[in-house]
Amino acid sequence: MSAASDLPPPVITPNFLGTLRTLRKLVRNPMEAWPAGVYTDPYVVSHMLGRNTMFICDPDLVQQVLVDDAESFVKAEPMRRSLEPALGRGILTSEGARWRLHRRVSAPVFRPAHVNNFIPAMITASREMRDVWATLPEGAPLEITHEMMRVTFEIILETMLSGRGNTDVARVEVSIRDFLESTSWQTALSALGAPTWTPFPGKSRSERGGDYLRHIVTERIVERRVSGERRNDLLSLMLDAKDPETGEGLDDTDIRDNIITSIGAGHETTTLALTWTFFLLARNPAIESRVLSEIAQVTGGAALEAGQVAELTYTRQVVQESMRVYPPVAMVVRQSTRDLKVGGVKITPHDNVFVPIYAIHHHTTLWPNPDVFDPERFAPEAVKARHRWSYLPFGAGPRICIGMGFALLEAVAILGTLLPASRLSAEPGFVPTPKLRVTMRPAEGMPMRLHRRG
Ligand code: HEM
Image 1 (cartoon, rainbow, N blue to C red):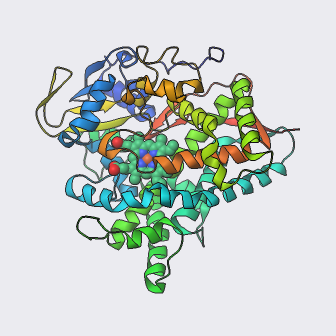
Image 2 (cartoon, rainbow, N blue to C red):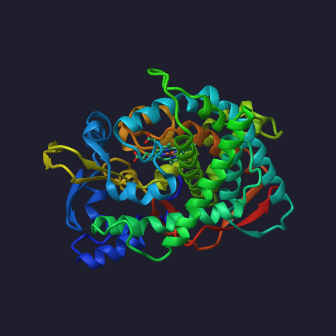
Image 3 (spheres, rainbow, N blue to C red):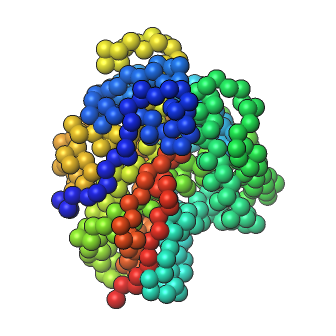
């Protein structure tokens, strides 16, 4: 194992707070409103902002709620309310028959046979970034979240829509950031029962961001419908996809919402997985050396090729462990639709059940030395020895992330291309604070410095 790291969980104040203070914490950083017991107990029952809320941490309870009894839960209203204005009613935000149709139509699109075809686009974008970095001076400062946003966005545009066309990439980046900033207000206002028209700081900016995203994707759909052209991208697959049971397809609004959902759900999350990975590698040079040896062995010292990505098994373990220490999606939320018992606790309709992924990944009974970064935890034997649902970066059950395979390939392709050319160092003494905004980002960004490898 590497040396013990100084990456403690964020300070959690037990939730005996008044409504106003809880609300303030929810807007600032919802992880601060989690009860302290989420890091040590099988579950914690709390009463937050007028709602019974159960935080579940025991993997058996996670299995019950997300897998076995998944039909008895829906995504919680505050989550839907915060995501729908930008993502529309695609697969991530739908429920019931609508969700089933979207999932059945989309699932084949994300099968390995299709996703593997996207690896060359992942490699090309990574090489472009490698070449840009090669022009920067030794020790150049880089905001790594921003850099990873750029490369993952190139990849998502290429694989979803066959390129950027006339898309204003900077405007899309700002749109996504404005929208994410609005989500914690939406969540807090929804928890208070405030109507959807309630104003809050940044609301119209985030609405304009959503309008722009819808506009660019609609334009592409119309172009393809008119030309009948098909390309090696997700949009073409979606235009032709049919429900295997009924033969039903999706209309243009549904396709638009699902493309935006994939951009929204896939771009920011993968960016953060990579951001945290670079930070952890910078702090753990022995692990970084092992990654470099693996890459050199697989590539023979040449540039990584698409067909070699799957062979980088240790690099993949590094990404998996990084997503344990810093899961890009730190919590999933559900609301029950019926009376049932979870871990002996009576749950009634509309009660919240929270799965605090970050806390489960740092739970003292599930992970020895939970704050230590150790990719050996993802060696095949170690994985087999653990409860499957003690590790949940992609959720679990029928609503598990549809882009899981895509994201892992992408992260490994990017690391495998960038790392042999460049080393990134963390600013001395810098310890990032994880902050929850649907995704878990470093509150202060991730300032690093670029060094060329000799
Ligand atoms: C490291 C990167 C990623 C992480 C950590 C991540 C995480 C997650 C999680 C935790 C969920 C479940 C949410 C819930 O149960 O409430 C989810 C769902 C989803 N993800 Fe990802 N994701 C990643 C990348 C991607 C990519 C690349 C795509 C698409 C290209 C994608 C598309 C989706 C979609 C469409 C859903 C909704 C599935 C459904 O409700 O049936 N994700 N993701």
